[in-house]
Amino acid sequence: YALAIAGKQLAAGQQSDGISLKANGGSDVALPISVKFADLLSLGQAIKGVDKVGYALTSTFGFTTPVGEVQVPLEHEGDFPVMHKPEIRLIGIRSKGINLLQQKADLVVDLGVANKNGGSSLGFEGFNWKLDLGGKQAANGVLASMTGVEAGKEQVVQLPVSLQLLQLGTVVYNAVVNKTPVDYRIAGNLNVVTPWGKAPLALNRAGNVPVQGGL
Image (cartoon, rainbow, N blue to C red; front, side, top):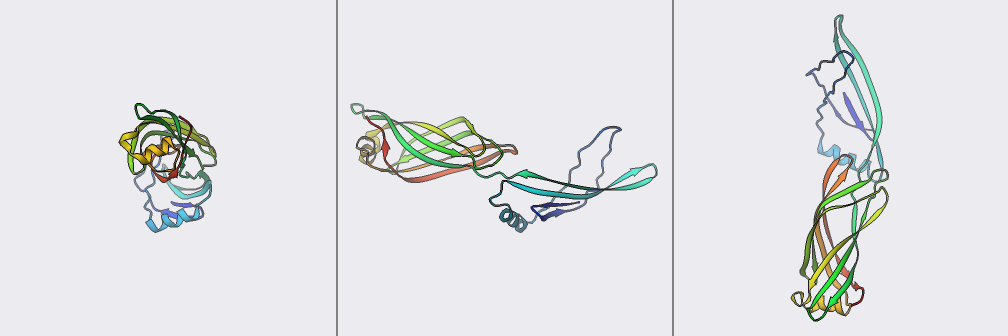
C-alpha cells in the first residue's frame, strides 16, 4: 500500500498479518505507517493556508480462497479538513465598578476567540488563565467550558476579575481609576475540541491597553 497526501507520497508499506472476513461481514484493516520528519515538514508547507487537503490510497489485497490467492487492487481518493489553530486576542479590559473606600475594583477581560477553519466548528474546555497587570499578578481562574465557535466566526469570552487596588500598586490604581494605559500579560492553557479529538493550546498575550468604563 502507499498513501499520498496533497500529491506527495507520505508512506508505503506492507501489512502481512492477515485478517479473517466473516460471511456478509466486514473487518477493519490497520495499515502501519512510518513517516520521516522531513516529509512532515514538507507536507506542512504544502497544506499551509488551505482548508481541505486531498489524499490517495493505493494498495493490493491478497485474498485466500478455496481456489488460491486472488489479488484485488484498491484505489481510493478523498479529502479531509485541515485544522487551523484558533486565534485568541485581547479585545479590551472594562471596569464594572470601583469601591474607592474598600480599594476594590471589578473588571471584565474581553477575549476574542476566532475559528479560522472553513468547515469545522471548534469547542473549548478547561481554560486555565492568569492575568498580570503592571508587572504583578492580578487574577487567575478556570473556565471549565466555553461556548463553541462556528467555522469562520469569532466568539467573545468574558473573564471576570476582582482586584485589590492597594496590593497591586499605583500603576494599576491609575489604570483603573484614572484610565491610564497599563501593561498586561494574559497566559494560560486550554483544550480545543476538534472533529479529530482534543488538542492542547497555550495562550500568551502581552501588550498595553487602557481600562475602559467608569466608576
